[in-house]
Length: 117
Image (tube, rainbow, N blue to C red; front, side, top):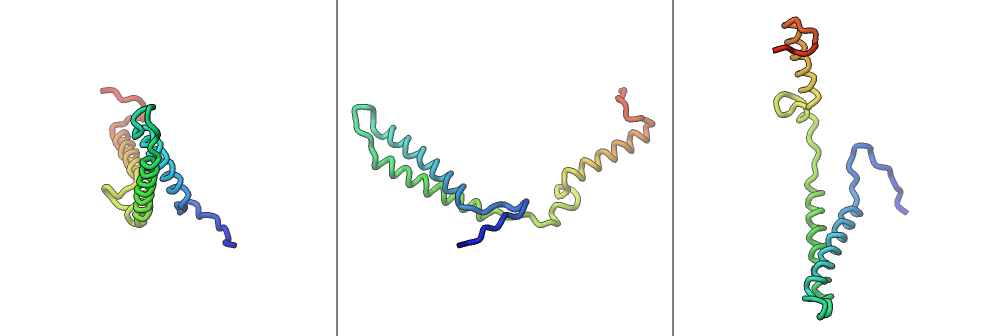
């Protein structure tokens, strides 16, 4: 029997349950809608064949899209979160703005109270 290993905190869990469930739900919705709409009213029998085809197509397309999106996931390199400009983190920008504001207030002799125009 395979051993279950707990996931590493902060790491994305790679599982097939979520994409399969999501694909099945969208396939079911597409199949039911097609089944109802394709019958052409209550006087006709439901078109089970079209509902099954719509379910299969929606299921496969959604599953392929989910697989492509999961394969394209890639963590950014650590050095990209440091630096200046667009590579700075918001915490660094906030600290820099607060520091600059404090310097401006000290230069004006302001004690940090409300500003007057």
